[in-house]
Length: 300
Image 1 (cartoon, one colour):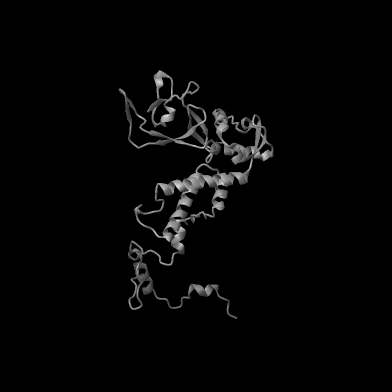
Image 2 (image 1 turned 90 degrees about the horizontal axis):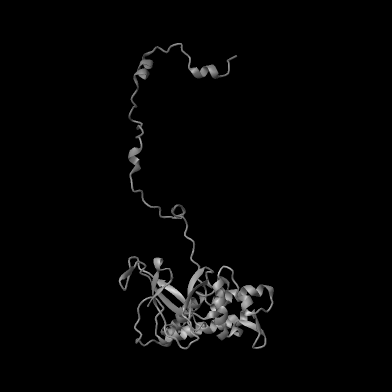
């Protein structure tokens, strides 16, 4: 499906996107057209594109897959932007968590519309409706009646909720027999219990990595610690010059510099004298004192 992102006829920009079928059909009169909005990404805190479904509750993250040289033929026009937009569903709670954690600094219970407030991204108010069908008690303490509820962030509940998400992803990876380790293996290959245990561990690490893509650094580290996964720290590479100095096996010289050195005269050979030196040797030196004698102590 191609969709316009600019209503101005003189400057129409179109995208080619994979849309969920449910968003292209109208279920009832209350349904609206899907809307693209900009929100903060829960991990990077930077601007990201999302789509709110026609029911106002479903939300999708928009991924752009773009080749270096590509374009689309749409009707009788050519769209120079050859990227392909792929929509994937996202649990709204992932997008709400950063706001919920920020509101916890004052330790007070707050309503959802008070929690989700962002002057830089005013379209975030659409998350309020998305949360109506979410169970906020999974990540927060709640207070009040069904008609009026206030929430306060609860880290212990959040880790439990995230752990359940990891397990769900892990089960799906196992069901689809998706190999997440390096190297190709046949899905029909019969593995022993030890190999199955190793693969299960790899599934857990991979699933944690996928969930971490929607968490800030602090919460991601706590989730990793919860599953007992050690993060690999890449050692810092030393500068090339320093590595050469510390190396025992020094590299061989690529050029022979010895040819630039002047040969020292051997003891057996006598060095050549200049014309002035030859003339001085012919002078009669009888009765002459050496110049060093003028600087010595006077004799008594």
